[in-house]
Image (cartoon, rainbow, N blue to C red; front, side):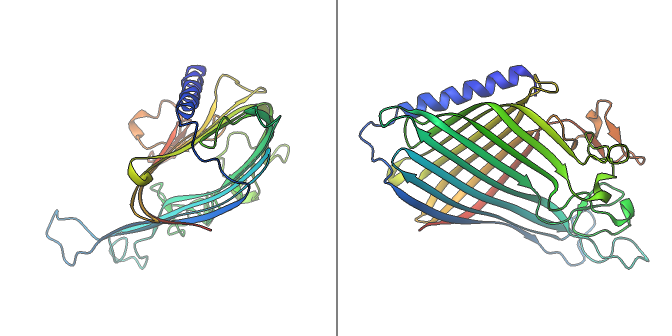
Length: 340
């Protein structure tokens, strides 16, 4: 995204910082040692109809999960936070076969598929300073294969041999890895930030057949055999987490990562912004609203509004457009969490 978007997100980071300073100075400080936990969220939707009236709709089955694990270590001036999240959801609309005379059943579609690992290390300069040094590493990919059909739908298996049956994505195809050493800022247990002027980022596609599909502009496997994009730039990362209301029933968590590639279009800033608002129904069980906003200047996305393609590439049948846009994900979950 453009530089003005970068500045807006930077303002949000400072807003987080001011909020964190507003916390009571007498609040309990996280003790040394490991803190571990896990959460499992369920996203369910179901509608069953037999012989519906004309215009009354069709069957719908949808199921999704949001699984997370964390292991955080605090030891004096040192902190080390490790987080894993998996968001996976599928759905099927209708039933029976796809068309009269066909033997292909209505397929399951992919609604969501993201596997994310993040690790952040920090060491304060001294006990009285919020500043220190550290590093952050993130890894992002999909877990299961995704296939496309002629209509551009994301399916669990191929039904019409589009792309000769080759999936358009699967584990490590594509994958993104970022390593960002830098200066850390952690005034309290609610807020932390990292500024890295020398970050390494790579986007890679391991499978030759997927690399040959021309879905990624940076790949040129036919000419030089390259199946990855190496980047060098700057990263700003910030995290905020707190709870409010009586008995801490309202939970809020936000994570923002900004990356600018010095080597190509540094004004177009990559964004990964994740938010979670949860209301604790009772201990361990939370109704959670999750949102993700992502933009990568080197990765094309499937454009939802076909009328606003703006000169990007379109499939021969005109049904699916690829281009550079922000990806937005929203999910409402009933989540159970445990700390151990």
